[in-house]
Length: 409
Picture 1: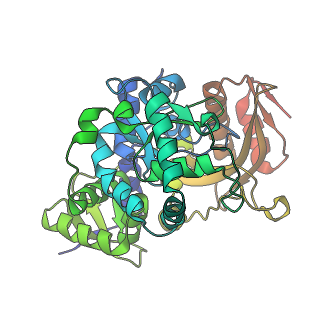
Picture 2: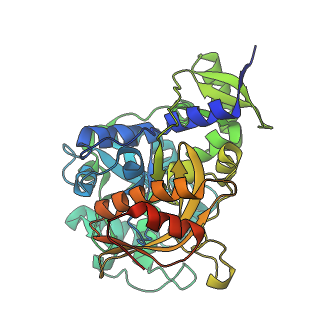
C-alpha cells in the first residue's frame, strides 16, 4: 500500500533532506561544511557577486557562520588535500571529490558529442582538433593555466558568446573531462590543469562505474537531498534524462531504497528515501540565495511552499517584480518573504533595496525575525551595518525589531 503524506509532512521531509536545522552558535568547522556538501550533493557556482558568491550561501543558510576560506581550501591544493572538485552537477557545481567517478559517463558523452552545448562544442572540436590538442599540450606542459594565459588562444569567435578560441577549446576539454578546474582566482577566472593533478591519479585511473550504476547513485543522492520528490524533481537535481531517471527509480524501489508515496496536493507520484528524516520547523529561520538547492526547481518550491519564485537578474529593470537579487526568507520552515539585497562593500553595509512579505503573514513577527537574520548575514559577510532603503510595512517592522543595532536608511 502506498504511504500517504500530508503537505506539512512533505515540507518537513524536504527540509530534513536539505540539512536545515536551527543554526548553532559559533563557527561551523570543516567537518560540518563537508558533511553538508555531501548531503546536498552539489553547491551551484555562479559568477554573480551581489551579496556573495552563490556557493557560499547554502552552507551559511544551514550552518550559520563559518570561515569561507575553509570551503575555498577544500577546492584547491594538491590531490591529497582536495575534498571538492568543480564539474557539471546541477549546473556548474562544487562536488565531493569522491563522486568524481559518478560523472565520468557525462564526460564521455560530452566527448562523444551529446546534444545542446556539448554538440556545439563538439562541432568546434571537429573543426579545430589540432588547436584543441595544442591548448591541452600547453596545460600538460605548464599548467595550471587560465584561458588568459594560453599562447595563441586569444582570437575572438564572435558567435561563441564572445569567447576566444582558447576559452572555447578549454570549455570543450572541461566538459569532456580532459582537464579540470584547479582553482578559481579572486576574479573568479577558472584555472585549469590535468585531472590527475587535480583529483589525483588514483581516481582518474579507477575504472568508472557502469552508466546505470553511476546514474542510480546520483538519483539516490538526489532523493536523499530532497527527502520526498517526484520523478521530475529527481531528474532535474543532477540534470539526468527522463527515461534514465524513471529506470533508476524503478531499480531503487526494487532495492528498497526508495518508497512510493502520495503527497497531499501533488498531482504526480512521488518517492521518499527510506532514510529520510523530517526537520523541526519551529524556530527554523534563514535567508536563501537564489541558487540554493532548495530553490533550484521553481515548480517544486511552489508545490511545497506555495511560493512562486523567479530569478529576475536577466529581466529588464522596468519589468522586475521583486528586484534584481532576491533572497527568499524562511521562518518557522515556511517561505514568508523575499528581500532584494546588495552588499555595499565600499560602505560596509548590507542594503535592503526592497522587502516583500507573502500574503497573510504576521508582519511584526517576520520583521523581528528578519532583523536578526540580516544582522547575522551582515556579520558573516564582514559588513558593519544594515541599510533599509524602503518604507514598506515590512521595512518598518525590521527597523522596529532591530532595536539598538546599526541600521540606517
